[in-house]
Structures are given as structure tokens and as C-alpha cells.
Length: 283
Image (cartoon, rainbow, N blue to C red; front, side, top):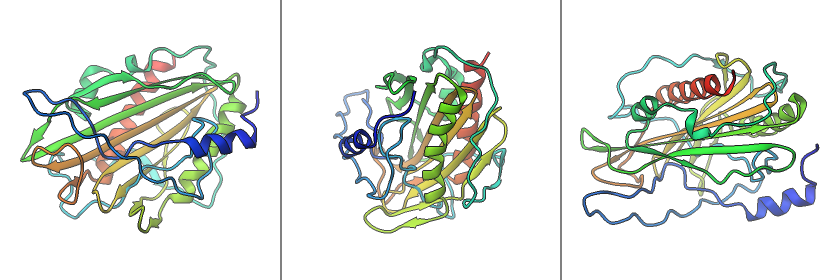
């Protein structure tokens, strides 16, 4: 089944709203008040709507980490991502893998110990993904539900995972390519105000059994950072977003005093999340 008509994509893109990257709203125990709602950032005018989600595809705002790195993260090995991909090349979007006919609950695809380590105080909540345009869709997000203090910083960590299953691999490949186009467009670039975003180089991930690419990004003003991965395997597409920012003091939202988690750490965590999700998704 083909994707939605062009006029429908335009309407969907115009109505889309985004969650502020790096800003985490959560309920705080011990009498602390609920945080204020997070405003959505503007949508880049040149970005194409994704047939995977029905919303404009924008890699999460990112920038290179400050020289001191993340105060809350221990030194990590380099992730097993490949050398920076050639952003001028078009991924083949050809992938082998089993054909899935249904999606288990995505919140069950990531173990509690992994969440506790990569997203302290994270609690699973199914997202609003709905079937449509010929695909089955489910998602989950592990949002922070309390303070995770270390060395005077609140470790703000969230994980978002989405899975889409298509009638065949060709349709999955088409939508994966669509999102990879956006990754390639933004990789290695800097977006000036009002976006204030710096993007890392496009990375090729070779450990997941399918074709996968990722990119790191950071907002230079809010100092929020995240890593985004998209995998095509068989007739499915798996998306992972891993957000990591350390907020000085008991702060919920990132600001000029925050420190983005370093690129190698977020990419390593992003890949680890994807590997576990795929291992539990694919028999």
C-alpha cells in the first residue's frame, strides 16, 4: 500500500507539534511542584513530512559537547558505529530479515536493568503511535519521573522507541529512506538562530542486523542533546531517540547552566537500546 497523498502530507506536516528536545517534564516526589508545560520548538520550513510518522522529520537539536563532557557520565568506549557515513551517498535501503506480522508491546522490548542504567528514574509509558498508511505502529517512551542527582546535577535522560511493521520490506525501505534523507541533510551542519543547533556527522551502525544510521545533535542555547537512530530490518522500521542532558541543581528543564551528554556516550547508549529492542523484537 502506498503512503498518503501529497496534499495529506502537507496538512499533516502543518498540524504537527514537537516535544522540546532535552526538556523533560516529570512528577516529582516529596512535595515538589509539577513542572510547567514545555513549549514546542518551531518546525524547520525546509523539512519534509515523514511517511513513517506523518510528521516533519527533524533530527533532534544537537551540538558538539562542551570540552568538559558530561559530569554525570562515566568515560565510555567509543560506540560500535562505523566511520562517518558519506552524506552525499544515498543508502540502499535494502535489508534482509524476518517478516513480522504483529508488534509486541514496545515497552516490553527494553529491560528494566537497561532503563535503570541509561535513564535513571525513567518510567515506561506507551506513546500515541497508531496504525495507518498500511503499517502497524507501536511506541514507548521512558520518561523521567524523579530527580536523578549526581555531583550536583540532575541527570535528565529519556528514551523513545517506535516500531512500524509494513506489508513487505520494499515499503519499509521506502519510508526508512525518507527519514534517512533528513539525517543526511542535517548531518555535519550548524543551524543558526532560532534553531541554535549543531549536528554531528552521519554514522553507519553495523551491529543491528539491518541497515541503520544515526546522528547526534545539540541545542547550543539550552545545552540539550540527543542521539537519533533509524533501522530498516526485514519489513519493519525501528526508531530510537536517546536524550541526555545534565541540569545543574534540582532543575527539570535544560538551560544555559546545563551540560549536554557527550556524543560518544549518547551514540553508545542509542546503539545499546536499539540492539536490545531488536533482539526482543526479532525471533
